[in-house]
Every structure is written in structure tokens, then in C-alpha cells.
Length: 125
Image (tube, rainbow, N blue to C red):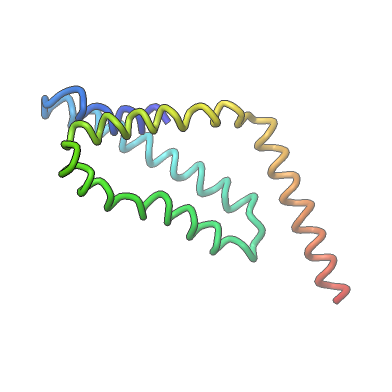
């Protein structure tokens, strides 16, 4: 998550191309690791029959809002948009504090129980 914050706030803080390029490179690596982790977890805890819907909703929010950056940049200025998105990224950290190893394990266990119950009900139908 820190990579995301650096990724979006650095262009708001500096115009130094070398600094921005270095931060974007390092942040790109952390974003790649974040995507691997979240997609793997999402696929593991989401029931099979809902995978397409959950994945499409996630992508709609993650990618569907990207075109808003252009008009916002025209209206507020490019650096302002980066600063605002940095604040939004920090705000996302607040609910993430509740995500612990315990809650992830519970979600995985609940998903397994739900899958087993669905499979059992399918067999009896």
C-alpha cells in the first residue's frame, strides 16, 4: 500500500524526473506484488459461481475510474489530482488496519464451509 501512496503522491511533490522515475519503478514492483496477493486471496475466498461477478466489480472500480483523471487534471491541475489521489490512498489504509492474519484465515475458513455446503446441496438436488 505504501507503494501506491508513493506512486500517486510523488508527482504532486516534485517535478524531478529522476526522482519520479525511481519512485514509479519501485512502486510498480510493489503494485505488482499487491495485485498478485489480492487477486489470489480474492479467488481463494470467493465462491466459484461468483468469481466472474466479483472480479468484474473489482476491475470496474479499479480501472473504470482511471478515465476520470483526465478531466480532473484539466479542471484542477495535474499536480492537484496526484495530491488528492495520495490522500485517497492514505484514507484506504484506515479500514485496512482491520485486515489481519486472523481475519484472512477466518474468511478462508468461511469460504471453504460455504463451498462445502453448496456442494452438498447440489448433490441432494
